Every structure is written in C-alpha cells, then in structure tokens.
Length: 411
Ligand code: DSN
Image 1: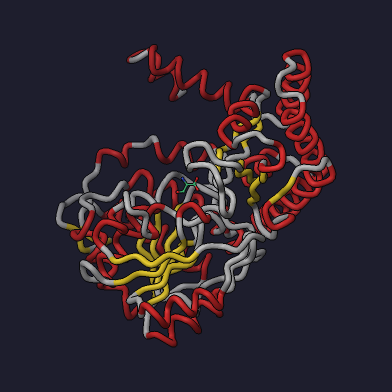
Image 2 (image 1 turned 90 degrees about the vertical axis):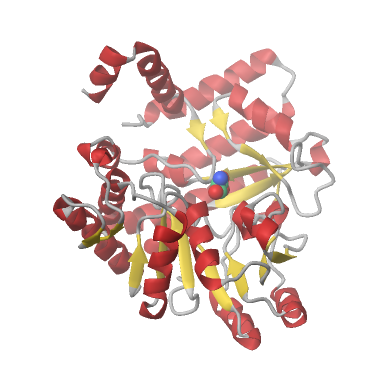
C-alpha cells in the first residue's frame, strides 16, 4: 500500500525502491553489518510520527503535543533496558556514530587521550580515525590485532599504562573473536580510564545470549539498532544511573536536535522482537551459520583470518591468491553475493584496494539459511575466486546463488 502512495507522487523513486527490493531478494547479503528488518519495524518508520518535533526527554519536552510520542519513547527505553539489563538508556541517537559522539562529548574534553582500535585492524571510524571527529579533536592512541586477528590484551595494557587514556574503547566493526570485556575493564581501572563498549556489530548476539555482555564492565555501551539487532537504522547509548543525566544532555541539546520518533517507534518494535525467545534461536543460528561458512571456505582452501570465527563475521584473506579484496568483492557481486572489501592484519594493500573481504551471517540467517546453505555459499565463493575469468562458470555460480535466494524469500 505504501508503495502505491509513493508511486502516485513519485514514480521515479517508487521504481528505484521496487528495484532495490528485487536486488535484495536476488542477492545473498553477506555484508556483516546489514540485516533485514521486519515489516512491522519498516512500517513504523513510515508513519505520522515523522511529523512530530519532540526535543527533550519523555515528559520533559520543549514542545506540546508529545503525550503519545512520550509513551512510545518510554516503551523503547524500558524494552532496551530490559533486553540488555541496564539502568539507563537513551534511544535518541540517530546513528551509532552519533551515539559514540555523545559519549565523547560527555566523558572527554577536547584533546584528551583515547585508546581505541585502529580502523584498518577492525575498529570503527569513530574510534579515532584521523578523518573523523574522534581523531581530529582527541589525542588517539590505537591498538590493533595480531596476525591471528586477535587483540593482544597485554599490548593494550602496555599502551594504556604508557599513555594514560581518559577513555578506552572496545568493540569493533570487523573482529571475529569474543571480546573480553572483563579484561578491558581491568586495564581501564589500572589507569582510571572510562571504558566504552561499542557493541554495534554484536548487539544481537549479546541480546540473544551468545556473546558475553559488557554490562557491569563498561561505563558506556553504544550500539546501532540495525545490524545483528535487526531493527531500524539508528543508535542507542546505555549506561548506569550515575551517567544518565550527562549522557542525555550530551545527546540533546549537545549534539542533536529533535529525535526521530518514527524511528524510535521502530526501535521499540525491534526491541520487543528481540525480547522474544525466538530471537535467542536466531542469535545462536547466526553463529552456527558463520562457523559453517568459515569451515566451508577453509575446506575449499580459502584462508580465513584467525582460522575461523567465534561470532557473526570473518575476513577472507586473499593474499595467497594474488587477488585483491576490491576485485573479489566486485566479483562476488557479479555472482549475486554482496560483501565488502576489508583490510587483513598487516595488509600490504591500501584500504581502498585491500587483501581481504569481510563476510557475515546476520542477514542470511534472518532469511532462514541454515548450515547446509552456508556450506553451499562457501563453495560458491571459493569457486568464484578460482574461476574468476570464466564467464560461463560465473553464470553457473550466479544461478546457484539465485537458487538459494529463491529458497528463502525476503518478505
Ligand atoms: N559501516 C558499518 C559496518 O559496516 O561495519 C560500521 O558502522
């Protein structure tokens, strides 16, 4: 029905949205940060709530007419608090980057030292990249991963003792091992630093009980809501009561204006979905699928950084194939698999070319893929890398990928 409204007003945009639905239906989505939101989540994001200004917090707004959005935002807050077992949550950040920015704004002063994971080692732009506000306005010290793709906690401790950061950031955009939040907390305590856990990638796994939680260790927990958590595109900050008022002020009026109440309603629905027992099964299946995919690739003689995965994501290491991440990501798109190029530890290539491809299983798991399907996906990827110049063979692989897509309709 919504598409009819769009079509009446703007057939050009409607056609492109229609085509994007077909693209998603006919593609095996392995971008580790993407997912497939439910119809209810999407419907809430397209409601009259987009019309409402509601600066401030529920029941303490600057504008009138907020009674109903107050109730909706309160539902979102209470549900996410229950889901993660936290004392306080702010559901207004428009994105994960803004959630992180608000924590920086509250916890740090311009020029303070922050210890975070390097972007090319799996960290995030907002963990101190020189091209991001975090790297421009703060003194960043970075830690990375060893050749097995693991954080060297002793090295993190050494850097912390040497540089005395005001805040340490853990959590990553491309890290396939379990994060030891307790160890990070011990390091932070040794130097009196705040600990921020950015769980954007693993939030669904934490909520589903298949990855340890940072609650009780991290002073601030930030996440996006659209990755493994499977909600609308947006962010959340969680913390103890001690930091609640300061974090809320950092979000508004610190870095944002009016909250997106239509997206907050969609977040409330996603949190309700994640509180259901089925979500635990989903989270467990994401990890089972990732392990099956990693094994299938390694069985086909494809290297995986760290020889496997403990969560939802892994990086194919292409160094021995002589191919680049950029080429293979494009090649995979050619056969109906979407992924992104990514650096591997000590990558000889630039971040624009890379020697790796990051792949993850949250989206395909939502579609219903199981371990057997992941084995087939691994075989398709491995064959594509091998037969990359043979058009007939690539067409054949595309047909195999399409068969899997047809087996699991998107909506
Ligand atoms: N762009 C996200 C990812 O792909 O991991 C990080 O925000």
